[in-house]
Length: 201
Image (cartoon, rainbow, N blue to C red; front, top):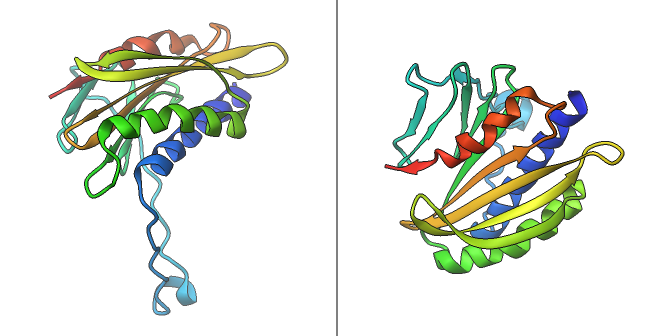
C-alpha cells in the first residue's frame, strides 16, 4: 500500500503543478522578514487537516461554487485552491483544483488547450505516466476535456489517472481521480463515482 500511496500523491502534486504552470503568470515571492521566526526564516505553513465529509455525504465549496458527494466515512482536506477527498483509510482518491484566470492573458479555451500539452509533458517527466487519450467531454454541462494516463506501479502493474478540466466564469476546474487494480485499494472503486458527482452550484 505504501508505494501506491506515494505514487498517487506524486501524480496529484505533478498535476497541480501543471495547472499552476499553465494558468499563473510568474509571481515574485516576498523576501522573508528579518524579524520573522528563526532569524529571517519564513513562518511554517500549517499542515491541512482532513475533516469528515458532512453527514449527508455532500461537500460544498461556496468559494468556488461546486459540490462533491462522497460515500459514508470519507474525508476532505482543503488547501488553498485544492480540495482532496480521501477514503476511510485517509488515502486520497479524488482531487478538485480551482485556478482563477482573472488577470491572466489566456482565455479559458486557450488554457484548456495548453493543459492538454502540459499535463502530458509534466506527468511523463514526473512519474513516467504515458498519455492514453484526450477527448472533448463535459463537466456538469460545461464543455471540457478529459485526459487519461497510464501510470506504472511495480513490475507490470499500472493504474489509470483521469483528469476532467473545464473553464467556467474565469476559473479552470480540474477534477482528478485514479483507477487502481482492486488488490491495491479496496476503496478505489468509489473514486470514479465521487469524481462524477462533481456539480456546479
